[in-house]
Length: 127
Image 1: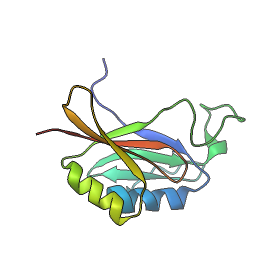
Image 2 (image 1 turned 180 degrees about the vertical axis):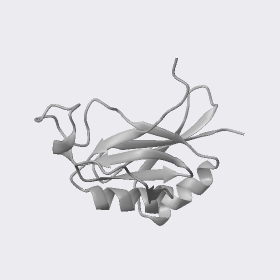
Image 3 (image 1 turned 180 degrees about the horizontal axis):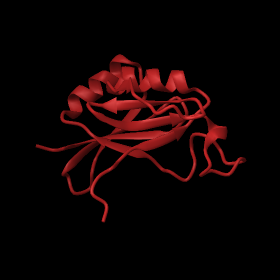
């Protein structure tokens, strides 16, 4: 039934700061976003808008008293071509992260938090 990840939506009252973080740290680019009646941004990897940002009060899918940032979603994971390049980019941007290898030894993983406390995973297949 599912064939691909379409996007991850992050509620934040720091839209500009969060967009700048993902642009700087992951190389995503802000791009086209429909003219919704609430503030937000879409961040693209190539032609795909992978991360959607929106202001907290605008979501019809979330209880009004639900926490922003760390909710039921544990993390969003993005595959990268080269884990060493990703690691160096995080270091260059002073992003605190932790690294691990999957128990089966097939994937290297890096975990860090965005400005809202959302955990982001970068994963690469071990050669």
